[in-house]
Image 1 (cartoon, rainbow, N blue to C red):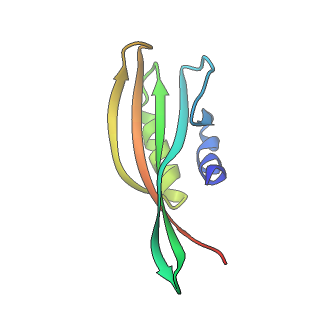
Image 2 (cartoon, rainbow, N blue to C red):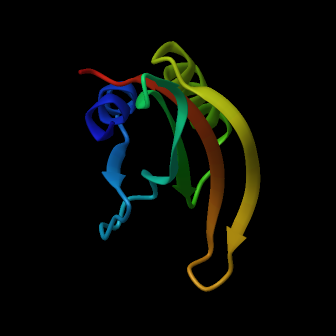
Length: 109
């Protein structure tokens, strides 16, 4: 799943990292999976897995265009947006956009 997300977001030209980033960039993206659940079963075997993930955009500058680009890239990669929130982190003075997505994955085997 990480590769799929990285492939979708890396072309935006912003640093994209799994879970955390320690650089000094004025804008960057992190992501993590927060829930995974069997969605369908065949012959007592999981055939579809629902994967729930969050993409976080961190920015010290206006991030409106980047948010639109992330939404487009994720949609084109087959992710369904669930919800989003505008946040501000006062201790680091950074704006934070949290985007939550769902992806239905077929199990092989």
